[in-house]
Image 1 (cartoon, rainbow, N blue to C red):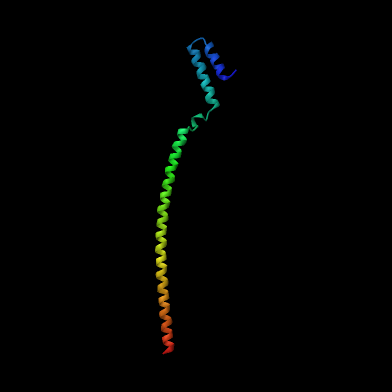
Image 2: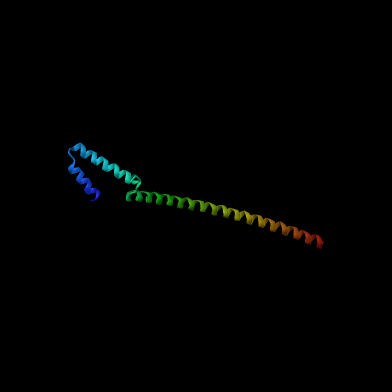
Length: 107
């Protein structure tokens, strides 16, 4: 016989309500012992809730990354402008030195 049929038989053969209540309590106890992890089982609702929470977090991370990428681009543009200023300054100063040297040697 199956456990359900055994439980049914025990309940129908019990002499009074108190005995039936004890049979039910014992059956529930055996069930809890057999499946101790049951309270931790996730339902479809739990999974959907987690999925929505993760999607929200992913969108936030994407937004944060876009902001950070834009900041890095701005910093790189500023660095590029600074490098160009330095290079132009160095080329100009080198040109002045070369022109002065040529003028000195020619004169």
